[in-house]
Length: 211
Image 1 (tube, one colour):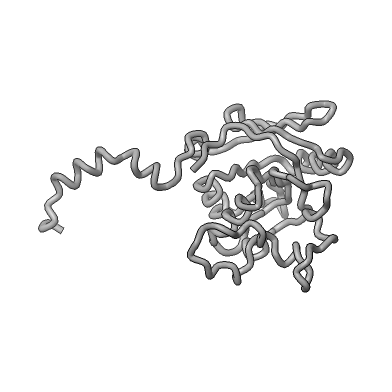
Image 2 (spheres, rainbow, N blue to C red):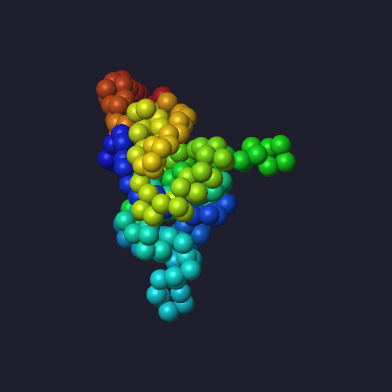
């Protein structure tokens, strides 16, 4: 997969919490055995009217978000089923980064992203960034007030910089293993191949009669 180091793009906002994977890519599109062609069907039930035309009331269809590559949304994004197709759909629809907040509800932490969605994103080169609730609120406000707002997301320095008049900057945390995988563009096969010499030595000495 392609390595991720730094990305600059237009920010789009989706003001919805608990967006599940069926909303991201509905089940009728999971029949294909190909990993391509999912992009136009991302958020299908919200994105299109019954006649197949784009729904003008769906926020991501707004002309101000044309060409967007960074999505800022609310907490618990990617919940529901474990379908990896949801990440494929988002990536093929042009998104490079998804930003969401963690939130405290009834003294319990609700993460920005569902765990399996986070894992699927990393192994497909899609960076997910968790910020605080107030920080995401600020991004929503800036996007609302500045059409075409861009941001730069720097994985090496672990920061998000808005291209507003204040160059507002947020720092984020990421698991070291996830960071290494993204920076080096390593998918699951690549990670396995790092141990190819060990695998080869094992196979050369392994006695199948002992199993």
